[in-house]
Length: 154
Ligand SMILES: [Zn+2]
Image (tube, rainbow, N blue to C red; front, side):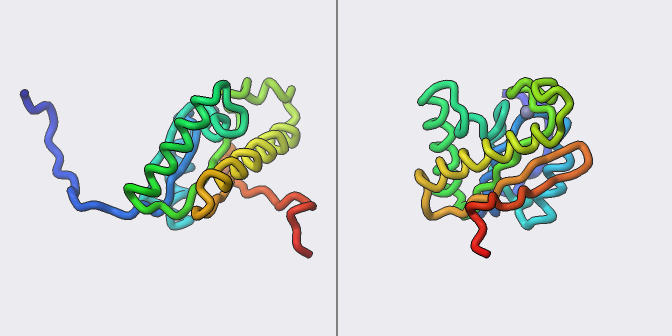
């Protein structure tokens, strides 16, 4: 072996602030990293795949859903992550991008809200002891959806 790069990394084990399931679209990398820091989840185990929570909400195969649930479960088991954070984003290519919604920004957000709700239900069933949060990253920041009328307690 021949060393190609030197950097000292901390070897101590850690507790993850959260496991974060999000898309690999690099346009959202900076805003999501800053947002995670803001909400106390800077030390996160990232599960980054095309479409993010799509693998749970609208999986193309049973394997895909199981694989992603296993990854989130491993973050909980290995790094005691108690939060699972789902982040969908504007113009996600895995869903056909914003073009699929023909410029209707609200319809696009509503679609992702429903997808995230479905993915959260899948996680709550498989990993009942973790808390699940859902967000939507846009080109102007990160949004949280209001609760659906049926989910409101007031
Ligand atoms: Zn995407």
